[in-house]
Length: 142
Image 1 (cartoon, rainbow, N blue to C red):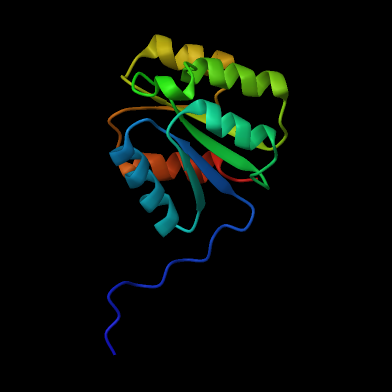
Image 2 (image 1 turned 30 degrees about the vertical axis):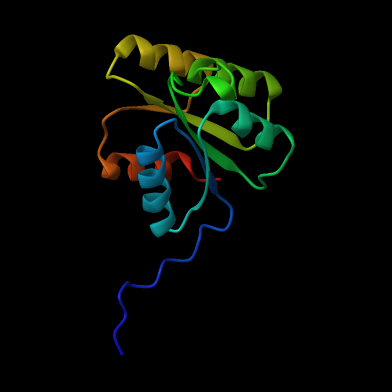
């Protein structure tokens, strides 16, 4: 009997990852990588639909939100950027939600702003998938 792929690990039962990224290619790559490592993954192309899902309680359990820094190509989804979205989530004080900001460049100033706004971590693009997985393991725990 020939199995084309090894079986997937069991999903982490208490952790979902929300990926908010405007690039379809990067969003898909992140979703596939996280799913193959056993995480439940929900993707959004822009912050507004993700905020609506969090606000309405559509996503249960503790969440780690991987949030892009800017959204130039998604005007139909609102004009929120990553920092503004992060500040909204901080104001809502949603329990069990952590946010890691995916920075457009490796900028110390952007990383400081993100941390001051409440991000648990930052990761500059382009990044290695091993660094992403390390971040998710570190901050994706309950």
